[in-house]
Image (cartoon, one colour):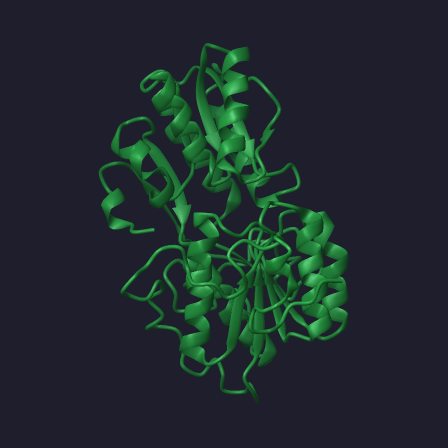
Length: 355
């Protein structure tokens, strides 16, 4: 097993398994803090006897989405006085993510926050972590069983339905479309597309999903290449609904290169830092997202609260944008908490977002 030093030094970075190293600074520079934590309760550390060691494990390091999350994780540590860092494989790989968690267990970290690439793959190792007294907080993984709490930025099906509503409007309510996911085991992304397809079938029966969901492994180049193949097979393709953030860049590049603006439409998860040029140029019209920095901060808040044995449940307000008065929609699983944290962005309002 490869070991990880708590400060982020170790063999993984040298071996090429991690992109950017552990605890690396974000790829973007910001003068202001990434997260407005002014309303976070100052007593979340009240019953924590010592500085806690909390690692956040993400699907893949080195992409803009998780660069932004790292900023929130780092800020939490600075704001609250804990040892926090973020790690992830250099490529989306379930086995590599499991190995990272194994290494963290061996070190005896206090808590693990995780955004899993594959829910099924991480269940056994998270069970092992909890048996050893490590608190586990997840995000984008409402189906995980071996956790203390899962925190979602929004209702997954509603998020996908909105993506389809925008795509259908652009497509004129008819025509062929495809959907992308990072992986068929990426639960939240699959639920977004479930919501999108259900909305399409109910409201736009003249639209047609022409292939099974395309796995792109959260990589913009893979998105581009696979979408190019689909376009060859279906030259009359009119729509792309993208669950993974990099699809916004892959689809935007394809539409721009083929001069298909106004003929092939995209609606999906994206960031302005990644898809902004395509929004600005009119190649794509709409992206949707939540702030990964706030999500990273929120996971760490919940980890410290769980370590302090504080009461966490429906109605709790984390004091973070989009995470006030959390809901617990499944009465059978009250530890699955949902916020209201997503936004829709077009060329008209993209200037409001600097990440």
